[in-house]
Image (tube, rainbow, N blue to C red; front, side):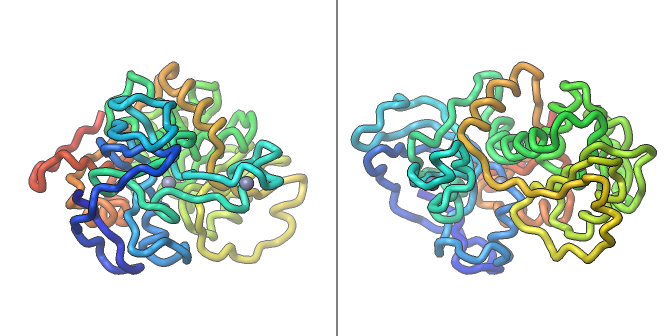
Length: 339
Ligand SMILES: [Zn+2]
Ligand SMILES: [Zn+2]
C-alpha cells in the first residue's frame, strides 16, 4: 500500500510502499476513504509530543470501509463505513477506565501516534473503538468530525452552559463547534490571528455574533472561553475576557508556556482546565447530534501524496475549516470541496 511515513520529527513525510497490514483478532482492516489533518499531527511532526512510534503513519481522523476482519471481529461487515478516532485502545481495567474516564486511561493507545494511522491506503483498528458514521456525511466531510468535532464537542460540554462563549483559534474544531453552540442558543465570540479578516468573516458566516483578533477585548464579558490555538499567552488573555465564575478550557494537546499572571485574573471563582482525548461515549453522543443540527464541515481535499502540503497549509493558517487527505485522488487531482 501507499503510505506517507514520518521517519523522524521535523523530517518531511516520505512516500513509501508498505505491505498491506493484516488485522489481528478483534481488529478490522480499513480501506481509507478520507483522513483529516489535525493540529496534533503538527505537534507530533514538530517533536512536541515526544514518544511517537517511529517510523509512523500519522492521521487520526479516518473514514474508511471495512476491508478485512481479524478473528472474532464481528461488529461490522466487510464494506461497512466506519470512523477511527484518536483513541485507539485502552486497558479497560485502570481506575480511570473503571470510572467512565477512559480518555484518561493509564495505558491508552492513540491512532497515528502509538499505532499507525490514516495517511495511507489501509490501516488497522480495534473494532471496539470504531464509530458508525451517519449516512448524511460524505467521506471528506465526515473526517474532521473524528477529532476536531469530537474533542471540540467534549470541550464545549466542559465549558458548561455558558450564554456567551469565546473561541480562541478559529480552525477545524472551532468551525464545527460554533455550529453546535449556536444551535444550543449560545452566543459565540470568535478570536482569530490578529488581522485575519477572512477567518473573522468565516466565523460570522457560521453564526458568531462577534469576531476579532485575539489581542482584542470582546465587546462584553464572556462566561466561558475555549482555547484551540496552541499559544499559552492566550490563557491570561482569555481570563481577562471572562466575567465572574467563568471558565477557560484549553482544548489542545500541546501549548506553549503559559506566562505568569496576577491572581486577580483567577479570583472570583474563575477556572482554567484542560480537555484530554475523548471517550467513546463522547463520540456516540456527538455523532448522534451532528446530523440533527445539522453540523456541516468545510474541507479542502488533497491527494495522499500531498500530505506535506496539507500540513504546511495548516501551519500557515491558509485553510478555512479542515484539510483532508484522499488516497483515491491522483497526485495532480487537488480539489477544493468546501461547502
Ligand atoms: Zn486531532
Ligand atoms: Zn485504563
